[in-house]
Image 1 (cartoon, rainbow, N blue to C red):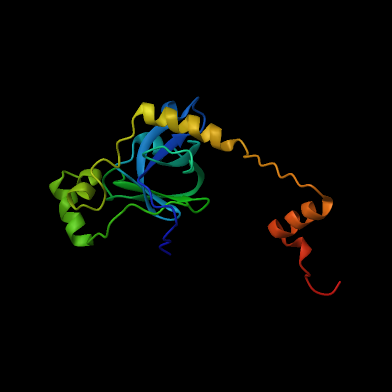
Image 2: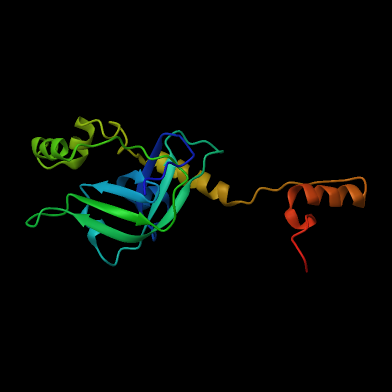
Length: 189
């Protein structure tokens, strides 16, 4: 179901411990938005493999901007990908909602990717970079960026407020009818 979402911005994806005190402390791993509601986590740390971990995914623009949303999505399903005799090479998180951001992953040839993983000593991040499937810096998420993203997230949670003033009730109700559909007939009652 490859969804091409609307917001085209360079993004970062952080897998977070929901119980942490802030976004910097909660960061457990970087991921890549590979579809509108799917996040790939290459070379996952053991903390993500704990079935009792309380995790969420935070998707945010690398160049934080007030008008670009900080998204927090629950994970409803984890998929492990690995060889039988080794730790998982990757996890894929199925998100509880679709991201508004465009994915940042290029096309991959399965055979070439397998060769690149082997050549990189099993390092999936390195293989993805060598194959130019992801940007070189997409996995770099520092504490300062996470703290600033957390602050912007809090600010974005505050509802925006707009005040509409009119000189008469007729203008006021006309203003309602422009913005809301309840002034239009909806069929017989």
